[in-house]
Amino acid sequence: MTLLPDPPLRALCPVDDIPEGGSRGFAPARGGFTGLFAVRRAGRVFVYVNCCPHIGTPLDWVPGHFLSADGARIVCATHGAEFGIEDGVCLRGPCLGGRLEPVMMEIRDGVVLVPHDAGL
Image (cartoon, rainbow, N blue to C red; front, side, top):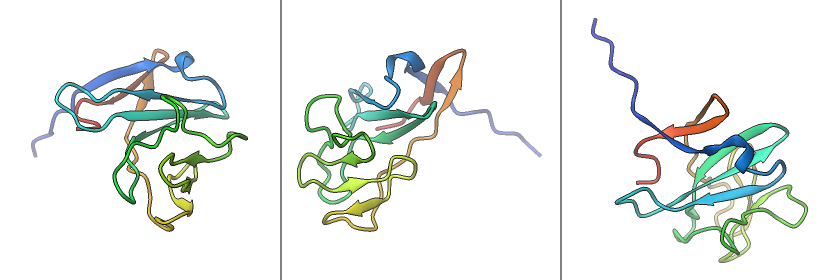
């Protein structure tokens, strides 16, 4: 039995660069088409591809801002679709029942790490 090596990871940012109850966007990795965004809620971090499942546009309504005014949901700037923070499921809007593409991540030494090819 041959063990496969762990996929290479890249640093997204220090956890403290994502405000508690807030979000932060990240430009596409070199050669990528879509960026990523992270939301920090109750000490947990959730990372998604910055692409609406309805028509493929970026979600942020102002660069780096992805959340509703009360911080309870992720909102698409194009048509107002709302998504759950913890699971990325569309709760309201034209992509009802669809979901955002989650990105596997881990936190090591206070830094959020994602797969090297995330968002490509």
